[in-house]
Amino acid sequence: MSTFLLEIVTPERKVYAEQANMISAKGIEGELGILPNHIPLVTPLKIGSITVKKMGSKDEIIAVNGGFMEVRKDKVVILAESAELPGQIDVDRAKAAKERAEKRLAETKQENVDFKRAELALQRALNRIDVSGK
Image 1 (tube, rainbow, N blue to C red):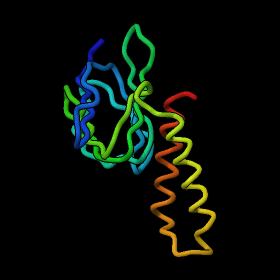
Image 2: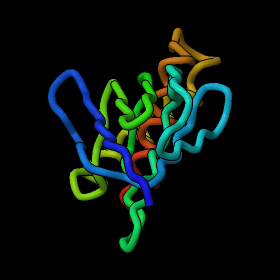
Image 3: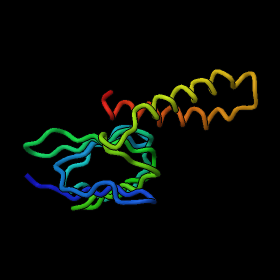
């Protein structure tokens, strides 16, 4: 079966660069499935996980916090604001961030709290917790 190179890059480093048979990502318009020889495409991504499928091995899941995906015939590049593999996620830190964001969202009516910022912080924390599997 055909493969393509998947690269996930953040401003700090290259997080992932391996051959894949298929990936699944959350675009702003919905879920995207990318196979080899896909039509060229550039799309913004939502906060969510990227599922990487490889023949003969278990699916890999990567937490991606927004960004853009560029699809070419033989390569997919994800330029993400941040991205983490499950083993790199500090679950205690993610749970603390979740609690802080929930507290801020509960206080939005009482204080001058930036609702959108708190909501995005909660989405990032939940994504990291989900990908870590803990």
